[in-house]
Image (cartoon, rainbow, N blue to C red; front, side, top):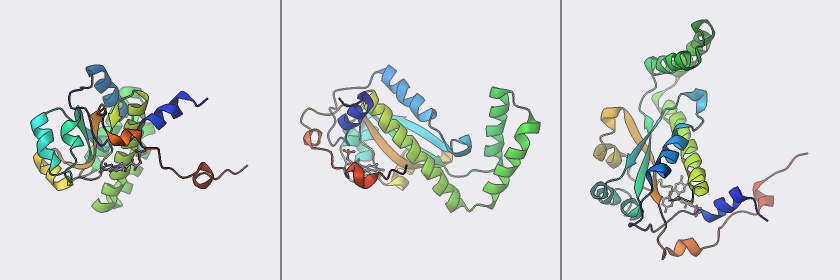
Length: 212
Ligand SMILES: Cc1cc2nc3c(=O)[nH]c(=O)nc-3n(C[C@H](O)[C@H](O)[C@H](O)COP(=O)(O)O)c2cc1C
């Protein structure tokens, strides 16, 4: 018998048609928000923000900026994972202030680490920082996909959208953010053909190397 979490991962798939009548409960949404916020990130800096959309008119408008993918309109909610446009010394200082407040760690202990991170980021080009932030966005996506599977929430991870259009429509630039990944969530339509398709994956003997 297969372990329950593996069964749930088999159950999930990238939904091509959502049931637009079915909505996520408030409780399920809170679970997804927590899963996003609890995502592990490099240094703990969390250079990511989740925009949660539940607005049919806006969702419909976003379809044409998502290569016509109707899931964006049909889904109960559309989650947009955004990254910070800049990680400067103030951003890093805020993080360390939070560590001090939450854990009561002394500045004497925190400062060497804070200085080393601040120095390392000051040497990086914006492009490099954005790439690093994007990596954190993908981690959050992975985390959300797994939690969706365990909670029997359907989803479709999406890179297929126009980030500049999303930035403009969602007024993200004003918030210092850029849209990076989109995740419509909700419940699969009964007639979504893709729910019947078998999973296509490498044999585990190809994808896993065991060294003992
Ligand atoms: C980062 C990422 C971006 C993706 N973008 C899209 C997308 O824009 N539209 C879509 O229908 N599926 C998209 N997919 C879904 C993949 O095609 C799908 O996960 C893959 O074929 C495996 O199928 P399964 O998830 O149904 O098991 C994306 C998946 C990932 C992980």
